[in-house]
Amino acid sequence: MALADTTNAIGAVTEMLQLRLQALSGSTLVTIGKPEDSDDATPHLNLFLYQIEFDPFLKNTPLNDGEKPPLWMVLKYLLTAYSAQDVSDTIIAHQRLGGAIKALNRNDLIDIGVNTAISKALSPNPQELHVTFDESNSDLLAKLMQGTDEKYRLSICFQVRPVMIAAAEPGDYSLLVGIDYTQPPTTLADPYVGIDTIPSMGAHIDGLDPVGFEVGEEVTIRGTDLHVANLSVMLGTVELPVTMQRPDQLKFTVDAARIGAGGISAGSHAVTVVQTLPGTGKKRKSNAVIGNLVPTLQSVVAVPPGAVTVNSGPPRTAFATIDLTGLLLGTHGDDVIAAFYRNGSVARMFDVFTIPPGPPPPQTQRRLTMAGSDAIPAGDYHLVVIVNGQQAPQSPVIHMDSP
Image 1 (tube, rainbow, N blue to C red):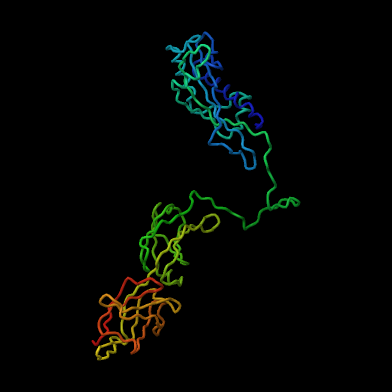
Image 2: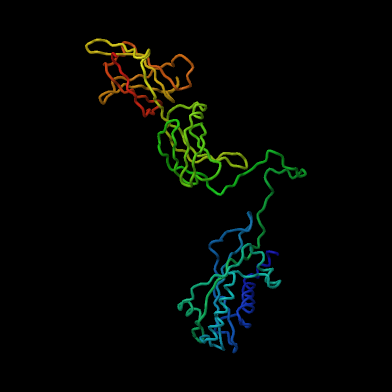
């Protein structure tokens, strides 16, 4: 239907309501106008359009991009039942009013396919027309009933929305960007430009538990939209699999094989949740939070086993060559510190290491070679190891003294 026909939309809605009430309410006579002007002597209904408002929810909403928005209106009606001329407070009038309410409430919709004129005016409306009942308090009715006779008549109020009157101006359209209109149209070729649409704004991270974690440890991410499909976790440049998902929680394991293959060291790394979009294969990332990948110190031994050089002193001092074994103990380019800790303080710290002979897996072994000038007071020490600012949770005891 032509949008120009929506000029008649207000009258079409009123006529539609009249026909509907006549067909379904039990009252074959429905007059249109102010209540005081309805002077028919037989039982009947009167329909009065007392107010028109512009729909605030659809204001400035066009039918299509580039078009001037139409006028979206809310029509407010007053419905009064009569048993005779000027008589609206009788059992018969109340019965008529109940039948009218039932007719209007049927499916809460107005059928626009009644006749050609109504259909032309209302069918361009992109949304179904809805009937909603309003509060009909005595103050509102008293204001609406003011007239020459100043009589109060029991009535109901309802509204119809959204009623559209299309804009008279043509749309502001233009040719598509990137199309050569001087040439015949061509078929799109692979690879196509695609946009994935998913029912989510994407994962969002609120925090990690724990913030510092070792290889092999399970970590919990808390946030929102963590239950969607095709999620993985990026720890720095290493992609880690998800082991559990809920809308507000996700868990992943710091897999030893993937960490080793990724070649990252202990330290602070960005943690993001990544969704692989099924249509294009593109990856959508969440916000980033900082996770601390910490080293694991499994053992510290003097080499050869138990070979500690002790100076008799006084004071008695000792030094040795010590092998450290564990995970993520650093590379030549990492900042690695080993500190000898005893009685609440650090006796000495070192930051120069070598790799022991042999082909051990990367970052699993380091060798600290102490010279005579590096000797520390003889005794037992906890060895504290820090890699790129992250301290290993283990501090094994090494015996720096004679057997």
